[in-house]
Image 1: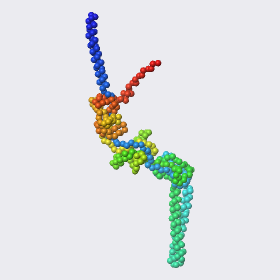
Image 2: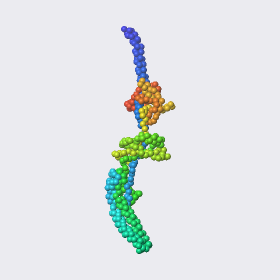
Image 3: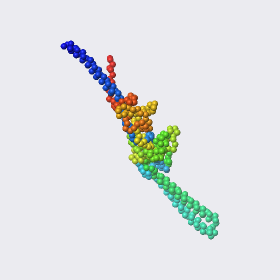
Image 4: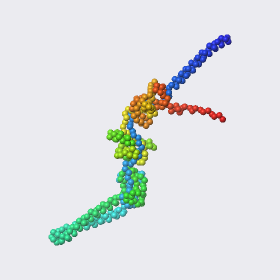
Length: 388
């Protein structure tokens, strides 16, 4: 019996070894097959309308800014607004002490009455002496003196009338009104302060127009021709985005293109106007400006990371339906943020490789995966403790 069992064991060992060897071979083949699919990250090429936009940084500016000054010397008697108030054109802002100007106006009017009386008397004398001259009752010299006095008094009346008009004008300057609609700034002078006529050193207050409002920005001179062509075709659309709050305003009107390019910077200044009815755009703030000069219809858009540069130009790996990749030469139209517009080589709906290209060769098998997520889920390799 022992001899038979030994023989059976002897025949069974090669079979077990063969089975073990076959199992190892199949396992190795499975691992090789699994390793053949290279993990990549992919995206789908989109076909869509893409606007042609010129990005800039701009500065919000008031269309009109007025520094309010007094046109006469005087004392501030009353202020009719508070700092930061919205005012309309013609609203009263400041009233000066009117008493000195009222007195000057009364004097001017009295002088005018006196001049008119003298002129009326001189006119009567001139008429009477003219009749006497016709009768040869007076000398020619006397007549000339009377006529000269009549003309002189007429001129004095005109001068006094002008003096009254000037006094009335100065009296009107005691009431300072808003020349434009806008928002008042910081009040520099207060009641009781002495103001000087057209003082270059001080302004009572500054008014800024907030609606509508302008945005000034600069673009490279290389964009000038495209902007001018778009302006002529009436397809320019300007939008802005507030840099801190993210507030966005679209459909601004390009109303100004400077008449020269700055030779030191190669930039040209433009201005766009926005309604700004809610006063969201504030003078002096810096904002991002987008000048849309056209639209590329049915453009092919892929992530910029899909494009590789080689000796033959720009290339993109395309993942086909059989999970193999094809290397294609492409022609790039332009960059749009994190994406690129492909003019030739890719069709809409095709799958392109955006990460993992370094491990690929044309015809290789690839498996779409989120490589960033996979990297985040990969456990850290433990390190051996140092022996103490």
